[in-house]
Image 1 (tube, helix red, strand yellow):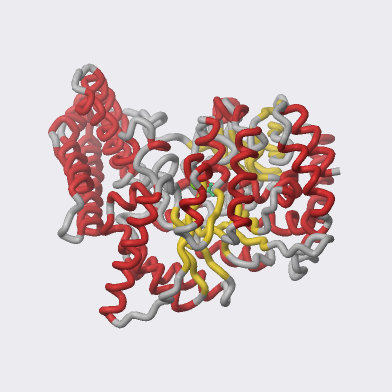
Image 2 (cartoon, helix red, strand yellow):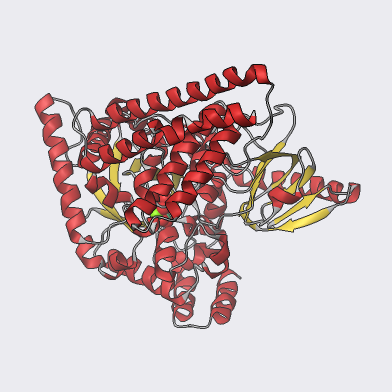
Length: 578
Ligand code: PEP
Ligand code: MG
């Protein structure tokens, strides 16, 4: 078998060697087979069964979400899905196709979906035309039911190292891999700070995205080497290449063992500046890795991952249990819980209708905007966080803030949640700190309004870069334009960090920049003293901090900030990094 290499963007470092497991996308690649005449009734029964299951899903979603007091948009959205699901064009027509063409239920359903989608495309009214997306979503739900467990992807062979190869994966898909060990994974699409990539990093396995056609070129069970550090995948390596990579794998392990010795060392620069190195987590299960790598706190708990891959929304009790577990696990060290940031590339069945039909989800009803539009749901989360604050040192972080009114509305809801708990006699930390994310250029430029109204700030560079440069962080077609060293990005960072330090309001960076060793000195030179990153990067960044001397770095970074030529900025950074 011919050996060849594929290039992409390595989003998680390290080397993995294993066998390929290909993943298909439900609607793109449904199985297509004919059935025996005596199986037609059973096949129609199977289809009906899947429809009934989805009806049941929608019903539970309705009651979990609305509690009898439905927010208008959400109820309406569920009603639309219900109507589509029960309409004869979707509920009955596929049965006829199964009988007439003797084809399997998945194939009958997708054929009918294509007919409906075409009809929608011809509708002139833009609102009605957009319902096309709802039809596709409803069909996907039924397909998932037909295909067995909704959306679960597990290694087919637990004995061997398995490398997942997919055209695209959603953050919801990837988060499931925390329970199912894959040795690495590859996708055709994706950008370096897409949430899919971020979760991949949190699995601590190598990953390469934006390979364009890996899914097409690689065959099931082929031997692969994934080198996340060098952005390359080698398919069917020959013996010499394989031996070389096994050697490299061994060397990396030695490096890791060396870093592990730094676990309990305090992160202080040569000139004595104390630096907080905290961890970003997606689920309470990630806590262990944070503690193992010596995190001095949780700087970002992306709470919305609790909402993915489940039916309905988590109840107040479930959320409370999760937040309390993290607070107690950190034993008094700070835990920053970011409120619900769904929308953009993190969508949820049942909620994603709202985000997906938005013409531009990253600029749409995402994060705090979504929460403020669904105050009842937001209050549930705020009460859960407040209740957990009794068991550790919890802080609340609000994502995607752009204006003062969003802070005020959020604060009003927090006050309401506190009042409700007081009335019930439930204990909580009444002095809980409330912080905001600086991830929209407007927030960075208007930082003074934030400094006077919030207890702390955290810069989300992933979004700040996306919104400053107008580059979709999840789109591989523009990944080459996504540049943390763009002079405009550096200006916003310098301005925000400088203003917060001057006002003595704590400020952190919790975007991916914080975990990039190449950027540690730069950030220190800009005055940053609090970094929050994926736990796997903590020790490497600590090593950089221990070797840094801010007295030398600061003037060099100031010179770099005056440059506007990307090549000169890169050269200046190389000099700073020595
Ligand atoms: C960010 O935008 O940098 C951030 C930390 O938040 P997220 O990556 O979850 O959008
Ligand atoms: Mg963000």
